Length: 124
Image 1 (tube, helix red, strand yellow):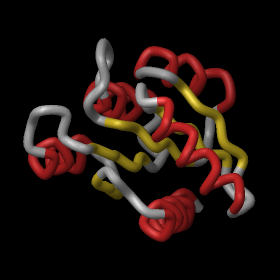
Image 2 (tube, rainbow, N blue to C red):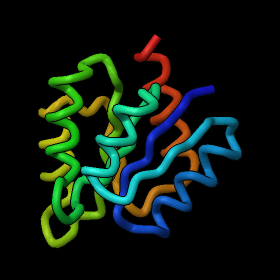
Image 3 (cartoon, helix red, strand yellow):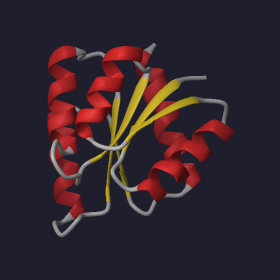
Image 4 (cartoon, rainbow, N blue to C red):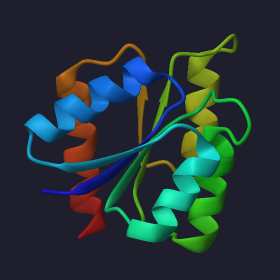
């Protein structure tokens, strides 16, 4: 299984993603925002990053850009519920920046597990 870093400012979504992924056998680390996510990435180098797009401070687009410059090989999954903007627009921009998968909130366990499984395959 994979080591997954979940970056999301919403505690409920972080907890849900962690529970789903851990039940499937993945090791999960969580970060409360983009800056925290980049710090944690630098310490443990996860196999896959799952990042929310709409976050205060360093948003998911900035996280994707930074990781693609420093660690282009890491597969990134972008997640968004919109946050006042069109979520399809936000997720399309995430794909342009290098996300390999996109998921809309609210997501179900099959969407999340499928996206992580495909990202892990890309990592190999």
